[in-house]
Length: 318
Image 1 (cartoon, rainbow, N blue to C red):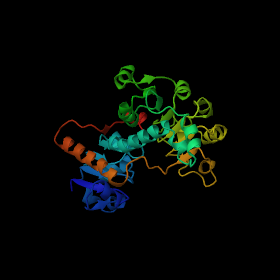
Image 2: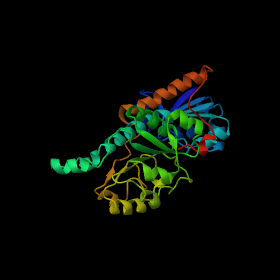
Image 3: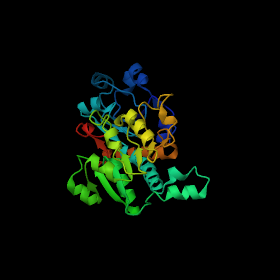
Image 4: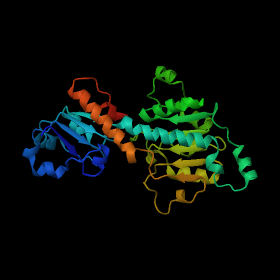
């Protein structure tokens, strides 16, 4: 056995890779170790089981690479990488629908869609609509210029917007190539009509977006979060939204997720919740499987690969 499909969710992996082959779970490996001694490649996705270094050595001694048809590998990758086993992730494929969702929300927000969609009175709707700048020359703030942030920036070029970016890891030369202006968080929140969060999810970014930043937002601004809920101090955001009914928050992620049943996020008229739909789903998930199939072909043919994850990358990536 040279390669296997491995996931605790045996149905979702079939959808990701568009196949109907045998899918193994971790217990299959632990219960029948001899059947997996020659496994060289693992194809997985969401619900990838975790292994210790000792388990990998004992049960998967021939393993060369893991191809993960989904986004973050933070929860399982380190033991493999520590043993010199390569890990590849379809994070770039998963970035596509997140970026598409983000761009759609930004364009609608700048047109005042979320403030006017409930109006039945044309005059009242027009009065509110006139508060919004539209999508030409408007400042949009991107927090985090990783894979998703960069893709959002590239997609927004068609709209002639002015893009401000906060990302300490973005080199000045790369910012110039992207056509964006780097700035600090305070300037970004105080200047932009839409602020979109794409920070990596780690200890350093937890609680980074707080009340002092929200209070700087311009009139009729929109805060959009498709990053992680833990990066926002939720109580600060709720208090701010109550004080500033002109501002809209569009939250695809929260902490916890979904919000607690008594959370005011459900009842605030200027808060729009979507149930973590920005990432790949439906037919979109097959894109992730195709990325990993192509990556596998490049790897076995000694051709350059694009989506290998390293221990160094895990320090900053989502």
